[in-house]
Length: 128
Image 1 (tube, one colour):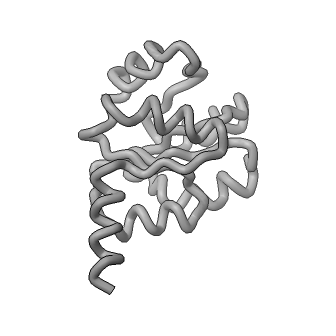
Image 2 (cartoon, rainbow, N blue to C red; image 1 turned 90 degrees about the vertical axis):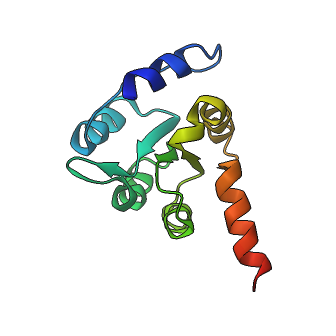
Image 3 (cartoon, one colour; image 1 turned 180 degrees about the vertical axis):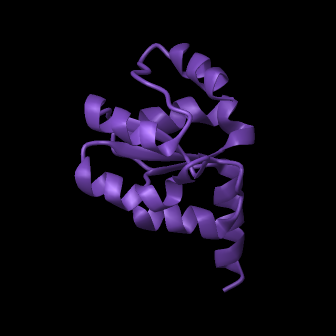
């Protein structure tokens, strides 16, 4: 999956992939070393929760915007991620279509919510 995402983003003319990591510890090291404008962060990693890492990452690297990438289409996950400081939320099954846009918007400081998750959240708000 990670290799496919790297290839996907590498095809975008205005996106440069500076690092990739298979675990949270390596991802954090890479962010602190490279100071990227955007970090695409999986919420469930082998050595920890990407969700729990968002707020500390934003505090230490305020110039790095975070786009969450996950299989979890739970509104609770999306709300927690955004509340912690993520600017984007993309579901893995739609990453091929949405990730490039999410990264570009995040680089400009603009929010992105996966279309399916936005519809779910909107439906919840309509019920209240």
